[in-house]
Amino acid sequence: MMSQNSMSAAGSAILLIVSNVLYHISQKSIPAGVNPIVSIIATFSTALVICLLILPVFADIHTIKTHIIKLTWASYLSGLSCAGIVLGHVLYYRSGWSLSSGTLFSYVAICIILIPAGLFIFHEKMTLSKIAGIIVSLAGLYLMTRN
Image (cartoon, rainbow, N blue to C red; front, side):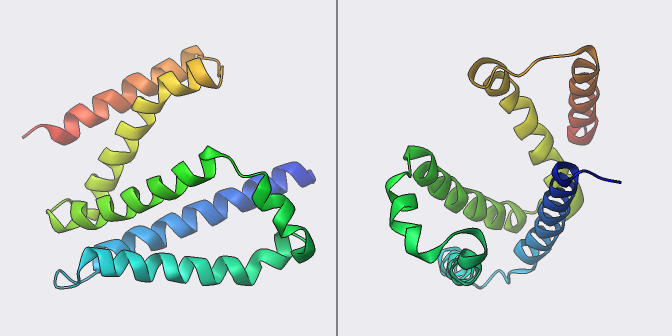
């Protein structure tokens, strides 16, 4: 039987994966004639409505002010980053990147770039299997970008 923690981890992984798949399919499907900024406004407006609807599941409505006061720079940088991610994907797909290889390329590159942050900021440990995974990922990036 799964523990509550591993069920939560599995559920969050499923949510993340399903949402990412839908996200990339929808980003790739935005017509070229749609202004990317107007598209992003629609995207974030939809996200705002969804978040407002599910807020009561995650927080007592009467304590929202307390949570707002606790916000740090990280939440605002995350918002800025989200806007860049969405705009980047719209432009990425419009420039001709394929859904499969373009996404794989960007995510592997992101993971490689995040390694120093994990090591030096968050004090994560590097193991032999992680190093092997990095080498395989770099080899994959090389093979994907070869002509």
